[in-house]
Image (cartoon, rainbow, N blue to C red; front, side, top):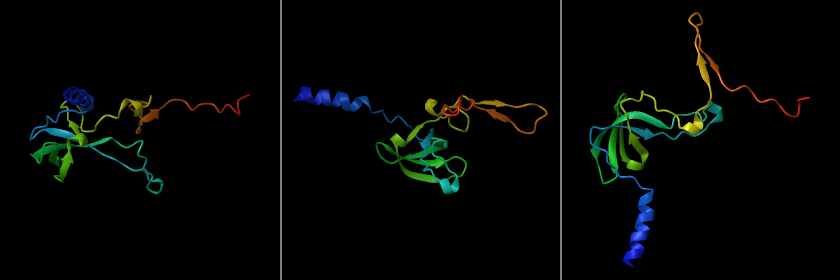
Length: 130
């Protein structure tokens, strides 16, 4: 029975991470956005995380109270699975995941008032190609 328990614990713990967040530490919070065509909102293009937030209180083993740094809005309780550490070398906006990054380039010219965003060229329509 003990051997079976250890085996199940190994599989269970493989996908878990330890909650090593401290009070006063800066974190990102997951930000779920639903698409809404009438408001021109696309969840695919929205940022995955919001923040930065500061942990103000530990409520339980895996739950925390966090405060948004700019608006001072309190979010409580927040589970450890909904936050990730803030790296001091990151900017104020979190990066997108690799699967959502495109191959776009931003080109700015000194005399132009706007930046040009160049992405992949559109694919040719095979049905109309001759």
